[in-house]
Image (cartoon, rainbow, N blue to C red; front, side, top):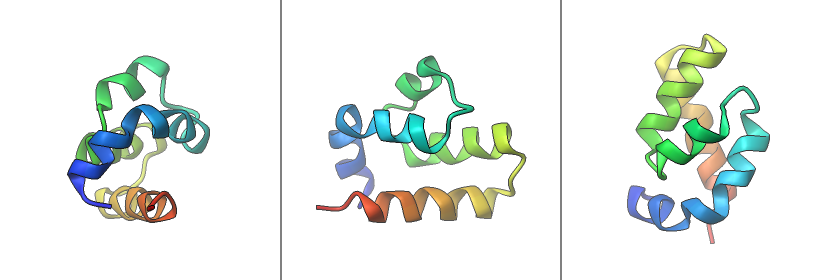
Length: 67
């Protein structure tokens, strides 16, 4: 899923993102606005992951929501 598709589908996907990463607040989820980079940054911060691990997690999550 490319950046534009994620942004376009964000309203549909943000509930699933909240389930996947429960440490993120509703406000943070809203502020991400479908930006994979912002999402990875927040995952890195909240979960203490490396940047690479957070980006990989976001990429895998995006791949599950293709279509």
